[in-house]
Picture (tube, helix red, strand yellow):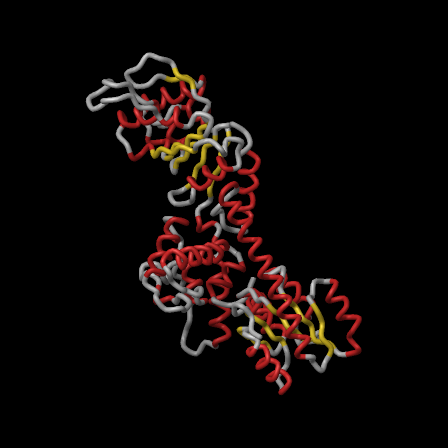
Length: 454
């Protein structure tokens, strides 16, 4: 019998006829088999991809099997880990079960029993995956949908959103273009008590001053040429809900004064009207400018700035959280595969190195647009490689560094200088440096120790 999909299995065992037979057996089960002859090789594989099944000897060379088990479970908490033991290792195998192993097998291997264990483990993972998908769908409706990353910056951002969402305080979201300010506004609204009411949006930079005023406050029939009927403004439409004003710094000083009046008292009049209207509307604003500078140079009202800045959220640029790029890449590839009917299987190490290294001046929006374009033109079921990426994106990220390589220099010295320069450009972030160099994090640590790189 074969598994419903093609899960990935990592077999860690020394070379030999038994290992060859076990690899063939796993292949017949329908698994995509990775093989490592020692613990270090296995660690590097686990460092680069998630596996569904881990089959490992209890006693292996270089890295302890218990450590491999911990790493595999960090990547996939539900991994079906089966440890191979001898009769003298039963106590150790039992301890492995306590630490999260799915099962252990005494040698010689009972293949039918092993097949049953693997099928049971994979089936369990499929159930967990389906539950995760359901939770993700609920999160998209009520939570912080699309907020992808596991860096401290993203964790702090998610915590701050959950703290302020239930309140009615005005929020000012700042950050460079493309960092996801509208996404954060949506998250705040969907986690607030106003989630069942409207979230109304207005881009203040897209409209002329007179049109912005009418869009915000509405107008009466005959208020100006072309006003053939009464129209409600965004404040009225968002009554009981949330109004998101993007590019708030683009408002004229006159409109800023009217906006301040509404925020202070909740009252306004339509353009051309005399009736005072009220709206219970939460206002969330966003800008890519520094409003403190704008107030100093008198392009933005200081009193309005203080009124808007009750709670502030700053979104870091993508270049300051490069460790999140692999997660974003995976999420966007999944999205665009579904959207465009493609089967891109991932990215090569070289392509990922370029994506992580690039500075992304357009931030997450630029990354998303680039990947969508690449996916559209990739019809085969294969990973993206460096050649698939736009030419102006590659070989640019960490800057050009002169390594001082001369004729006769050993490869070890060249490698040492490359690692040292990459670490320096990555600000000492070893995970980022490993991604740029195209090696596993464990390998990088070993080479740092080997070469004495500080």
